[in-house]
Image: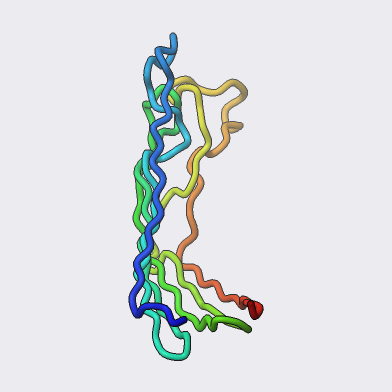
Amino acid sequence: MTAPPWTWSTTATLNDFRFDGDADYGDNRIAGLPKAFGISELRWNGADHWYIAPALQAATRSWIDHANTLDAPGYALVNLRIGQRPQHGWGWFVEGRNLLDRKHIVTTGVLRDARIPPPGPAGTQHAQFLPGDGITVYAGLEYRPKP
């Protein structure tokens, strides 16, 4: 069975996690999760099981604190994968991620309220914004046994 020449796949996660009438946070969003995250890929399948697949990966902003006073901005990244994937036997791929070298925050710590300084001496606070990788290249092999 041959793959169609073009395939489009998308995966998305929508999050609407909130406090429910909390005494401190009311109905605020729970920190640490973007409201939406997704990846969309358009894949061209060529002769001899070759493929090329550009993709867009995106996330909306996410709150750092439950008081919803400090947030990490959303981001959009461009990725590209090429390879050869036969129906059985060995295949390979090379994938480039964040090809436009966008600075982005991939995950964060979570605080109760960013306006309240943490306990302890100055200089002992932990970083809350964790950066994503710049341009990155991955390569791999995959094996598909005969059915």
